[in-house]
Image (tube, rainbow, N blue to C red; front, side):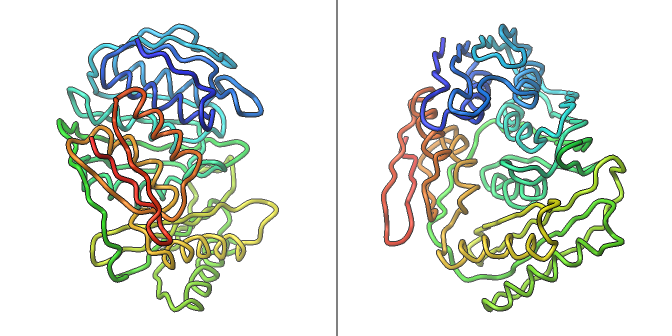
Length: 345
């Protein structure tokens, strides 16, 4: 049985999500305690609980301690069957985080998976936007052999949520190692600017225009699609996701959220400035994608490598967990202005 102390490293919900996923994939029971110990409100929140329960559905697991505010649980998985799975968050909890928690499990399923998530947030704080997953994470994972798609039925924002999205995954028997060694030459910068029931204020257009203006000032040409969404009458909101592609196949991205305290222009500028930081550093993986890739590198056969411009607490936590649960070995070294992260075995 895996024994995982959730207070280690970042002490965040990421440790819980990945520990559950690795337990399911290896079919080894898990005991995790001190869940989210370093967060202001420790224990399981609604979105974490739903992630655990959804993972349990995927692998017919028995779970003890799966309740709100619980700081300890036991997870005993069986074979990952796949099929059609439904999940309901009931808050503005992040749908992308639930997808990230379950995608590794789905990749090892016996059958294709269709995971439908309702009544959650597609674009919320402290999580990637749904379009970052669609246009940065999934295309990168495709290079490792993972075939997955996300479709959005309803965009959802804080505080009501009420978003809805579906992830479909074809099982992948063996993940491929990747060598993201060279940034290369920039080919294109694209994006999508979304607003829900805010078309009368031209929010999506203003976000896009501000992002493009900021990028142009730094000599980056861009094309940003505008989506005036009307899928969710319960909660207005907005977001923008940007991504750049190079001639070596590298994707780096950035995103930003709208809120009552931010102008549409500042949302677009924020996303563009984040992307510019990445582009000027010339990494092969952006700051946020870097921690997301760690578990896939650990699960893949052979050596993998990428470069990123900083080491976040989530990167450190994810490496620690992979080394603890899978006996993986990672090397991290500073090379000029970047960090080289290599999974050696």
